[in-house]
Image 1 (cartoon, rainbow, N blue to C red):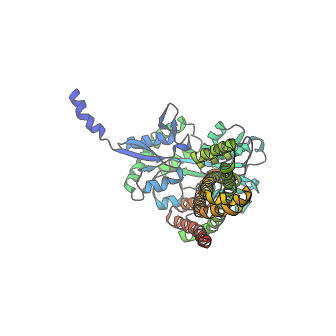
Image 2 (tube, rainbow, N blue to C red):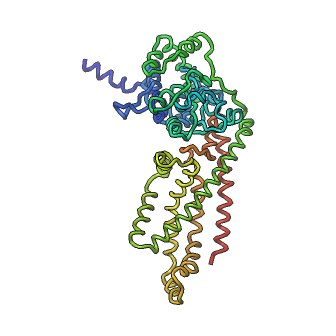
Image 3 (spheres, rainbow, N blue to C red):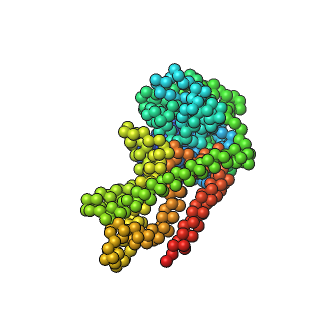
Length: 480
């Protein structure tokens, strides 16, 4: 018996692995950390992946990836299958090898309980804000409703914060998949979803690299087999997502051509570029305006902090040093979340204001160190000579220390502005759709990063290079 086990162990150890990628931050019922063992994941997509691996004679292995990066990651070979609520769209089918659909969902409109009688369709939201997850069918629907019904589409990077913002009054509605809406209603009290009036239907699929058609066909056979033997139904009932739409959907998949998502056919990339270019230009304007305002705040506050640390008393210096170290020692993303979400119980800052204040406060800490170093670089002899001539401390700062410090600080200030221009891409986490976020949406909708990425890089260069040239000219002019 022992000899048999010893012979079988190498074969077991060499069992081929099926790597599948998903976003564990999306939460149940897709993929989430198992409450009983945070090292593992749980969710209906986890169970489906296990069944597929079993049907292929492999062992499933989960790979975490951001939802927006699933398509690109599976194409470059980071994993074999991309799952986690991946929607069936023409662009995705054109770019990747896509399986048959394995779940049908509806787009559900969620409002506050008090508004359920007032708002039950998109036409009711003229002039109001409706949120959703960026790069999804729901976002495409809202973009169309912007021109048709006059509502404002708000894009999020996750499917949790839209419902929190709805409950707090920052949004008037959320449009997302019915199973996400049902989970949100359990998690956030005071919400109501119009499940009886679906806005649209869609399907979840599994994506593979474009050349992996043979593996795709094998996965399709496993999915069909699990539909026939009731395995998928048991999984969906376990996670409480089985509804009246699933059995007719299964019958259509097994008996005829599988249904496709009811979305606009994918347009040629040239037409898509023409359609998205105005949105990219608007996002570029938002980026430059946000960056300029945040930098102005950073410069003004940075000068005050640096001056306080040079001229202030012990207590003042201690307080300002604490601000600088805490700000520089914590991530700017965390600071943005605290400003926008953490303080919402006290003050509900608009997203753009929170982004400007967050970036301004963060960069003020770095600017203050530049100015403090520049001021302390002015030689003591010059300062003492000015005081000997009878100049007041303010006059010494204005005519001697300040101008020299500014000249020394100009180059690093310019570098910081260029860095802030690029760091402005982080504010998409609090729903500000700046240039990088709009590019991400563009890329997701056409199934490629080549054209959107090149265009985004060109726009950033157009904004940053003139600034660098201006700073260089000022340096040469004031050099002395």
